[in-house]
Amino acid sequence: MNDVDAQTANKLLAAATKKSFEIGVKMNIAVVDAGANLKAFHRMDGAWLGSIDIACKKARTARQFDMATGEIGSLSQPGGALFNIEHSNGGLISFPGGLPLVNKNGRVIGAVGVSGSSVEDDQAVAEAAIASVTAALP
Image 1 (tube, rainbow, N blue to C red):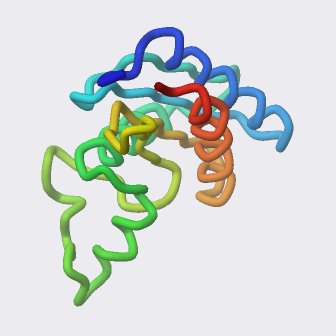
Image 2 (image 1 turned 60 degrees about the horizontal axis):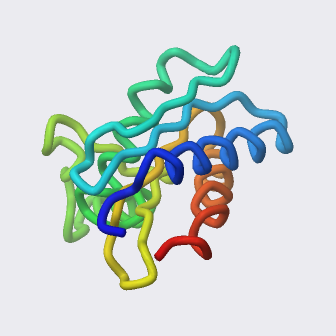
């Protein structure tokens, strides 16, 4: 698999939604394909409108740089190797909640971005989404 397909994208959304309900938060969840294009999106009832864009940018950021957005955040602090990177590419997100989706061959085939609560909750929901499909990826 070289690109996240619709079935996998829907599984990511379902797992993220399930985790969100379990921890009692309302999230916006975005899935992008290998080209960083939006593949699927879900806004839970009552999720913040302002987090729609953040979730999409987290997913896009994770795919464009093939790393977790939280990792980019640690590298983009003053004096860091990627200082001010969040101002590139039309705006990136450099805090947790965006994760790349990697197949068994180590190829990034998409990414998920989650926003709507604390960065800790966003990250936990993104991790649950990725974990739900990783074992089944070719």
